[in-house]
Length: 215
Image (cartoon, rainbow, N blue to C red; front, side, top):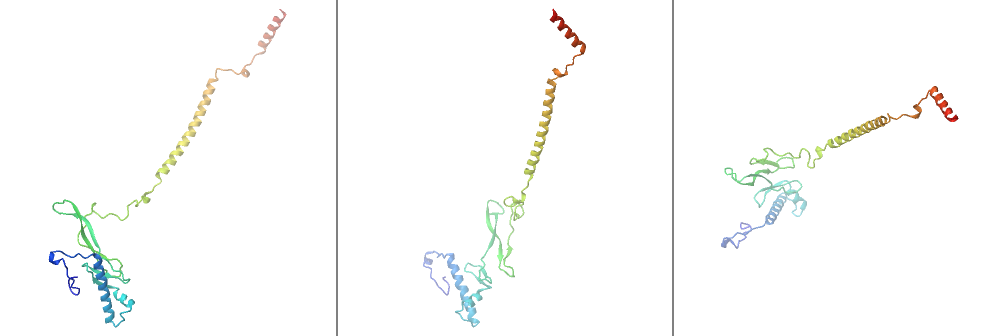
């Protein structure tokens, strides 16, 4: 701001101080610069300076140097692309290797083709912790949805089925064993229906009973 055409005097210059200008002032300077450049282009083409559409069209697809010191490209929609720098974790001292910091390793060049994305140009290598870039999506997904298996459910179902079969077989075997135990306990008993008496024994018994009656 101290240079022409503004020639703004810094009152702190004589005291060894510097006037600090906020970043918003740089954006204001850029907007005035872009507008003046587009207006000049419209006037050179013989257009109407009051035609806002013509002025905006003159801004599209142009480059300008920002007050922040970097080049800015304005696309066909009138959107200004910012200055983006890729930073990475690197050692503060290659010899001592004490501590780490963030350092620029790449810049995004202005668009030179029909693609809507800027081109990344690496200026230094990235020291990956694992030696290689990480994958964009984990193997099992961010929530493990890609590694869902039904092994536990299947194993539980098989174990439950085997348990039921073993239980039924055990009940059948126990019932048969219990029945055999009951039969073994009845071997010493004789059922009255199984007793058979001969005729001679029955006649002798009847004679004895008659003799007793006569006596």
